[in-house]
Length: 234
Image (cartoon, rainbow, N blue to C red):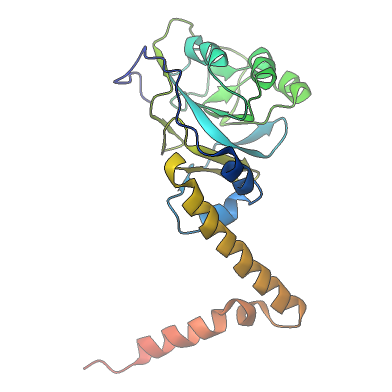
């Protein structure tokens, strides 16, 4: 839990966002396929999960660092989020002071925000459900903390053990949350397409009567590894 940031009190309005069409295409793929792509993809650690609102999230990050439990900069971030963005808040994982509630969620949704990811907790869960904004967090807690700062907006942060920079693409669904560097989204999209095509071939083979190990090449891989381990050592 970090109580300071080297760039605290900074607020940056300009964010290098990737091409919106590429982000839209990436949103068609689940986090599991993106994570399997072999590209430069980071996966948030366990604990940050879907809590309320809609489920699917995909968009460039507006980032917030806040002193754990302090709501000053999460509230200010509503002025900076642009349509299509995902708000990502580094709250240090604190579990006893909520950083986002229903009023903030409604304001963000009105600004076109696609969703919120919080390394911390939220409150007003029923109200957020009514708003419909997708929210991912570590849990819920009814009380807030302080409103004195410090904080920072659109600086590099940590969320779920992962570096998130302004403009990085955040994709979230019920399986979890992944982050792609904003300047490498096209590369990850192509690699993810290859994963989808491979899995489609597996499903076609299984539907045609093949076993899952045969369709996926597991049988061949086991035989290969068995031969290697049994090979004489000179």
